[in-house]
Image (tube, rainbow, N blue to C red; front, side, top):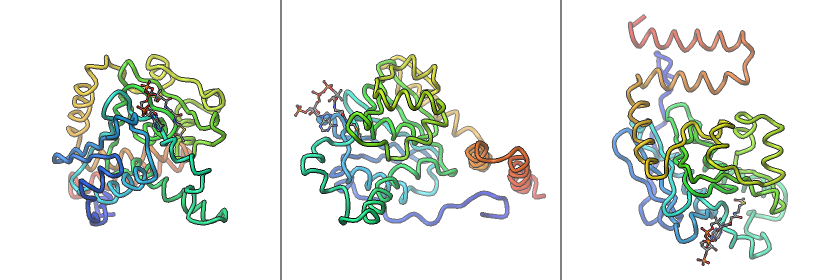
Length: 268
Ligand code: ACO
């Protein structure tokens, strides 16, 4: 933290190279304060592998410090068809660095790092969702702060239908957004939620015609960048802790953040 209460990022580590990202089915474009991460295996409907999730984690660790907004989108007809089903063909043997539960726990924690950085307060993250967002793809959209959906978006938490649980950080944001009963219904039926319903449930903040998705995201990015950077960081930090805090704790957090703001704005 600085005196002004604004969290500074640690110096970014090496940005993964283009070839490395391509191998992981990803593309990264950084333009000043905006980074765009594109899931880029359209011929597989942007199905994701372990390399994809590790690549996402590496992008999170290496973001230039002046990036304020990160957009996640999918190339081709879908946002993402979730885990690459080809990875199940070896009887699941690739799902751990070792045989015991501890090794598997560490292994999954490493994959989850591809998602958790999206909630960091120093950036605002937007999922631009069109077509299918299934399983790990739906969870990736949920890991973002905001979701802008095209009217052809289809969300589905498929994991239970495959004998798995959603373990790419999605259960918490899902419950935060729709509540436990609706989350249960969506997960245990693995049904598909279309864009209109997604908007009603709060799974998408904005729904636009498919050909207006890029423009809607660009407008949102412009609006987000117009806000004072320090205030944006402090406000995101405040809002994300609000559900866990008592009113008293949240009031104290508001005072702490405001002291930082006043110092930065007026030197007091
Ligand atoms: N893993 C690997 N390959 C995939 C995946 C996937 N998850 N999804 C699609 N593909 C491949 C298809 O096998 C097909 O390959 P082919 O051209 O060699 O035949 C290609 O992508 C195009 O897929 P289609 O099914 O032809 O495309 P369509 O637009 O008709 O359907 C859809 C798209 C609905 C996404 C369908 O492909 C599908 O249901 N995919 C599987 C989704 C799934 O169950 N994901 C796992 C979720 S659980 C989790 O993420 C942990």
